[in-house]
Image (cartoon, rainbow over all chains, first blue to last red; front, side):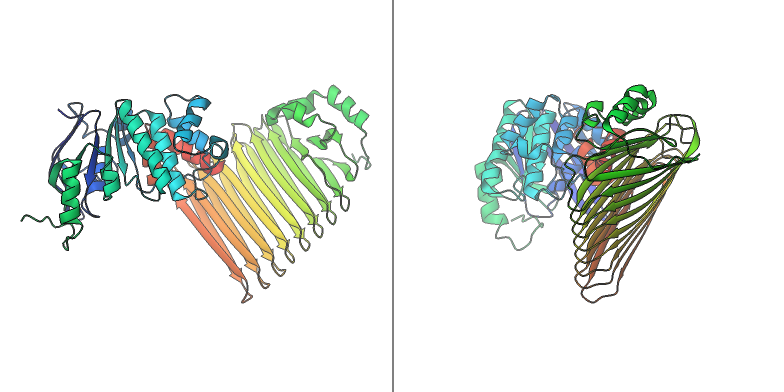
Length: 241
Length: 327
């Protein structure tokens, strides 16, 4: 039994089937990846698991530790330990990094907040009092978002395109943070179309056109993705050959 | 009764401060540590209703006060080239539940002088009070003047606040003002500030106000960029909840080459609150440029979902977002 089980989920948005008969088990304490081209339905799946607005009207069920979370609001799911890091993190005018992270953090002590920033290679002396707004680059906001997730101490983390807007060195910091989350017992799901990110996972699912085409080891999926998906002319149309 | 213009010595100020529970009560209500004000290097003026209860000036900074029936008339002059290192503290207010306070300010910052003012307007017990402030401000060539005004009101909402200011900026001068009303109920407020900016002068005007209950907020900020290379920014950050109403009228006109301006208005509306923003940008010189942005409505959904996905309830998330916007 997975910590999160997606059971035969079908989701239609704007008359278009986005998720089609989807069945996925995410194993507790493992790092998973969902890989696939743009528009495959990866982010939609993450939003559906998180319970975001507009993604609640689906067929099937989603279980967390064996219990349906379908009727739960986004914050109720979060209080169970589920969270999501967005591809493009939100901007908060006037909200300092200190306030943002400490409001979310389980351990609200200053030292603990500073430690989370340091892990992401952000100097706390320079960042604690800055606003989480447009004065920060997308990469900086991404790292602050990951710091906030670390501070939340979640049990099930989905990160949508964790490498988006991130330089190589910072990506290593994020990967270290992922390994720390796993060490703490969290289950991690990476949503990506990058092979570099896929390789951080232990298991993967290949999505195309709202379906799971392939699943298994990262090596197996990497080969499949590299050989079949990248050269594919028919993005998001599953190749059944 | 009219009191003649007078200057106050340090000894007199100390004596007045010690004797006056009123002064301390007003200052306590500001929430700032008294020791930061009670510093010989900090010039200050504390006015309760129509009485100066404490004051202290510094060399080059002059204060002339005339007592009026329902307030004061004050002339503040900073001599040419004088730089006041620490912010001057002004405190106007009334402790009773009812009354009228009128403040007429004539501020003249002479050439190349620099000063920052921290002003508190304190009405902690207001049930039915009117606070009317009229200011004329002249900032001389190359001078810098910043004015931060924080209002602290009672929770009753029975207060009417009407601050108006006409500001003239001479070439290469800088003027920055922030108006903040976040503590207590707004009641009814009409802010009306108008600034004229001459060559290469810089103006920033910002208002941050949070309205609840049946509060009424009206902001009129006007900037005339008449000098070559003049720059100006008008910023409003407003939150209205319950049945509160906000109207923001920002007008920026650029009529000289290389004049640059920006109008930025954000209003968050909750419950049955109503917000209106009417930005007017007017350019009548081909080498001038003004931009504007306005966002009015509910809290941004992405911000909300980010915070809720970290475990905050919707109400907690909204509160945090509004706190940030108004901070």
